[in-house]
Image 1 (cartoon, rainbow, N blue to C red):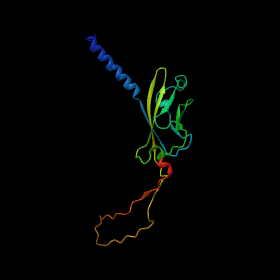
Image 2: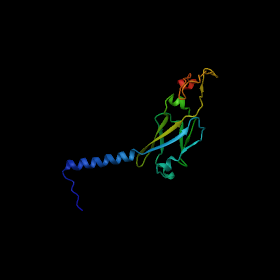
Image 3: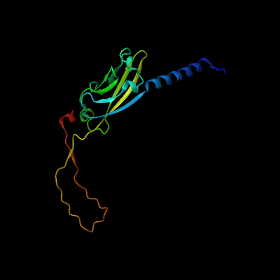
Image 4: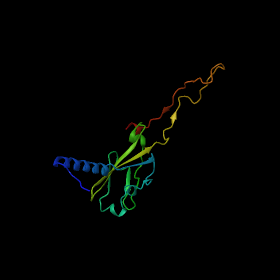
Length: 167
């Protein structure tokens, strides 16, 4: 089989395209984990080294490290077993406020050769701030002549806001 590169400029474009594709594939590795908020120190999150295809014996020599764009002290990796775990209490409301989605974004970096992996850890909400209602009991008087599918609006619930949510 013969392969013809064409002109020098075409060859460079083709080579650059392959190089960009290789960088994209190598740098676009993504892992997704989830952990409930308020998880205690030491709570298992995931086997990050195994999931990234790294050998445990490589972690220290290749300078395995985790950087966080959000808060680096919340999660940590044990370099002996490659497990990602909760390092300190995660308060979802303090981290993300009232946002419906809450995640911690990590970058895992290993050297020799350099590899960067993107890891997202979703922080699942637990019902630690239950809603309150203005009154505990409401009496409704409904006429018998009302159709079956009639709706009756009620006053909405209110969420208690702690000081940590305001930060």
